[in-house]
Amino acid sequence: MSVSGLLVRFNVGNFCSINDNQSFSLISGNIKNHEDRLYSAKDFKLLKFASVFGANASGKSNLIKAIQYAVTILLQGTENSFADSNRNNYFRMNPLSKNRNSYFEFEILINDCVYAYGFEISVFEKKIKEEWLIKLGKEENVTIYTRNINDGVSYFNDNYLNSDIARRMNIYLEDYSKVDYKLFLKEVVSNKAELYKNEGKLGILRDIYKWISNVNISYPDTLVTGYDTLSFDNFSDLMKALKSFDTGISKIISHEISKDQAFDKVSYKLRDDVDKTIKLLGRQRSESLLENDNKVLRVNINGNLILISTNGDEIKFKEICFEHFGVSDVKFSLGEESDGTRRLLDLLSVLFAEENSLFIIDELDHSLHPQLTLHFVKTFLRIAKIKNIQLVITTHESRLLNLKLLRRDEIYFIERKENGASVIVPFDRFNERFDKRIDVAYLDGRYGAVPLFDSIYPDYEDVDN
Image (cartoon, rainbow, N blue to C red):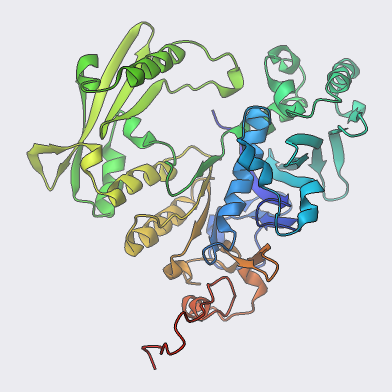
């Protein structure tokens, strides 16, 4: 279930290698090329694609982890969400940071208005300190609600809602004034459907929560959507995409199998876990905000991709297989495909995503040939001209640093300073010609964000000399 919204900016401070507050903005600059893939809001334009470059350990992944952390705190709170090791996710290069609050804020465009939702938290104590929701305006900002746990002061804007609803909201806030292990936004949208029946303005709280809940974040060792596209009934569009990527796959086959076939040589524990999940699929989720209309469970069993669907009491099992180069009597399981093909099958979900989806992918080029990475980005940029979906990637693939392919404001660098702090540097700060080979300049260290090597051996000589 998606919400009509787009990311405007994400702000973070005192988290992992990020020390001072850093802003990752998707507001476009004054650049004229490729304007057809921008989203035009009332007062500005938004990027649908952004690429982040930097050396290993520069902090690229920590920007992604910060977004993931903020989403997780909203959805789960602090009590049961994190191992003790996560208490050290403040900027540890400065001992004083342990006692500083960490800062997380999303700025989101919804219905042509921008809202800032954020919170401050003591990462070490695992305690939320402040929380706010503000409607940002060109002339003035309107605070919808704030709460400060330290002094117990909370505020819900009486002028934003009718008086009866506003009184109820202030009572909720007062009851929540000292709660430091979960966020008020989660509480006020959970199991309170009656609040939103007749109060249109209040719906923004639910919209903000839904949008953040639906952010798709993946890392090199995790899936983007878990092969969501392989749940489709019709594979014709997916096959067109696969053929353009030259994977050798000529046909995708979805055939029904029995439960015994699906769970052949599977541990009893996995059977029990899947059975429990099937029962959950057959029931209405307790929180309607997280309800999943697509009642399909995808399970990787010994390298075989099994789709489990429920329709009332009826449960069906299907296995996904692949044919190559038109040979129909030889079929391959998902586990028999190469790492790159499996990676691509998962990434293709981005190209078929619903409107207003946001995907954040750490190391897009992981397991992909450089040409496949380039082709994937080119394909996304074509789709971005007609669909409002956003993709943020980190990558080492310097071939993407091409000003004929990307706009200047679609390129960011993350650089590690001498004190170990990560700094986000937009490329459009650099005044470069449109035809400049910025990939070469990047690898030569022109923009920072590349590793600097010292020789291990005193007599080492560069082979290029």
